[in-house]
Length: 351
Image 1 (cartoon, helix red, strand yellow):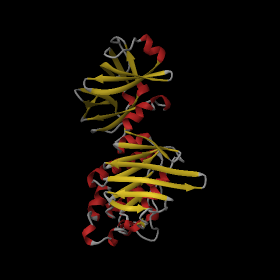
Image 2 (image 1 turned 180 degrees about the horizontal axis):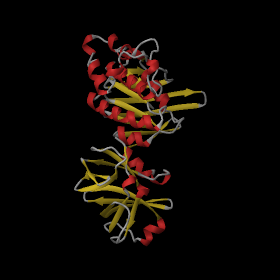
Image 3 (image 1 turned 60 degrees about the vertical axis):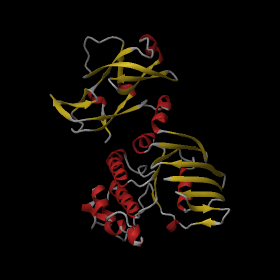
Image 4 (image 1 turned 135 degrees about the vertical axis):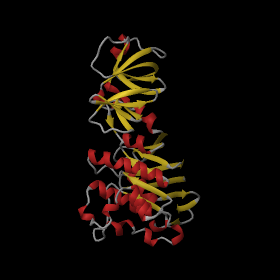
């Protein structure tokens, strides 16, 4: 996907003005409430007309104020999944899913209902009334409806913000799996850095209606290390597990990590907060933590009264966090050796 945007619009006291070109299939739009994210969504989808500007998607002009071109929403081939599913209450799940699909010319029907329903695990819901769906199910139906419309661009406008933490954890795996499987280019809009890291490659950061910077979610997470209450959240892809007494041992690179058995077995993506990693200058004689890793210090990241410590653990990276006084007492320096201790209960399955 290649998207060119140069737009200006004033809404009361709010002014949106942004010009950018973005290429790729997994792009994030990040910023706090009021930064212009939803305004951009509505402009791209044709739900709001800009005062002036240009929108061009893969060489096809969707809007050009100079040439007086402005395609209506139904001709833009841009599908939007909003934070509220906006399903049709008088239609069951199957008919909701097929609403846009049935209006497509035959040559543009790229996906089959059976494939989408299988990917989203909603086959058992097809005959159900939408009034009987949970919040997470409704969002999966909305995503399926958008995919079946065969868009050139899919926009996910804070699709998880209306869900509680438990439902978010349920739907993120479906999002990742389904978006990768069907390979439709998308813009993922959110103010959640965690969602950006899980679902995007490049991120456009907006503030006060302006594009401030372009980055990637991993770099943004490290830059914001000092401002997050839990510090930095490490993402660890853990392999096959085996039982070790009442705990589970997961393969991580060339070593194993011991994880509390409250987490389900099997490979997956786990989160580990930087503040849950204890550092030692020398090998401790005894400790209650079940994981002790020898590591090489790669980088120090100053962050207010704390220091982020990037560690190389046999080819795998971890970011720990200590207060500045502790960093001085440990005599931390790049290239130095430390031991990192982690409790089995510190890990949380993400996917």
